[in-house]
Image 1 (spheres, rainbow, N blue to C red):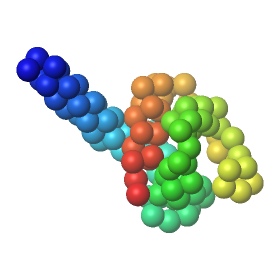
Image 2 (tube, rainbow, N blue to C red):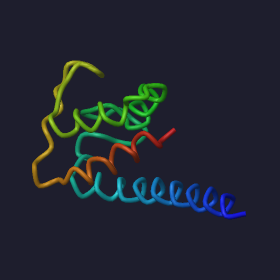
Image 3 (tube, one colour):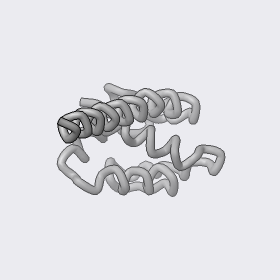
Length: 106
């Protein structure tokens, strides 16, 4: 009986954490001015967020790869336009939340 409650509680907390990160990710995305170059459904200066989510959907290392790219900047994954590094004023936690949110878009 205790095992069943433990499994249920663990599953609920895992889902709640992912949902919280996704909600916080959208807010962090907007607050960090990422929307100046990225739109959800269409290419702008940078790729559409849904295109990013689709490209990395089957990559088990996507979260770490994208967190690094968001923090440090880069180019080549979606063309030659470079993405600048994210300012140090944006926390690593916010970057994690943003990437989680982007990868949840379908």
